[in-house]
Image (tube, rainbow, N blue to C red; front, side):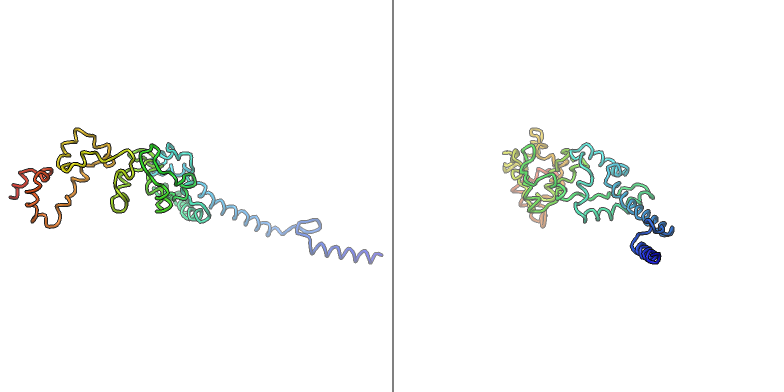
Length: 287
């Protein structure tokens, strides 16, 4: 009987030694060296996560960019704009894992560099693409809010695939001459609507502006200088700060090529036109 009990005890002891985990009842605790290694590994892992997470969390906070001297004014404009309630990440970090990884690759090194060298003017945030804008805005709007401008957004955004910030470059962080959210007309005319890339007829975009009748006179170029005191040129031409200089600083299209050889004949038939820019004395200077 005693021999049978001894054999059973030995079998139970072997079972415990085989299946039970260290530190469980009937088994000795793990060696101190292994416990220390696990603790060190856990602390190291937590530290690495923290070192990576801290820059990501910090660099999407408005306060982070307010510390940069070159961005202070832009952040002040953002706070009073219609987008002041939107977070930085909502617009400037592209959605999805690829966008987050791309932002992390820029923000993590920059965060630790500025800790050593101090804030600089580097802007970590890229301009938002149209997918970020379309999270809130549709491309269906055809006219401006005041009803004057015809703006086929679908044609610009979905067909031509123009990024929203191409037109709305001063949407949030800067104030254009027309105020927030209003693209400058000069930008439209210089980038696209120059008559070649896209049409430049006023009535194609403006519902309330038409070419005045006096502008259609055949002698308008000759008499327009006399009209500046009777009409408000700025109602249409104020999109440029020097709308007179835009024309008068350039050589007329008739004054190119062999102009010197042929100008005498034109002067005899268009003398009044010459006098718009030239005086009688200017002819005598050469002749």
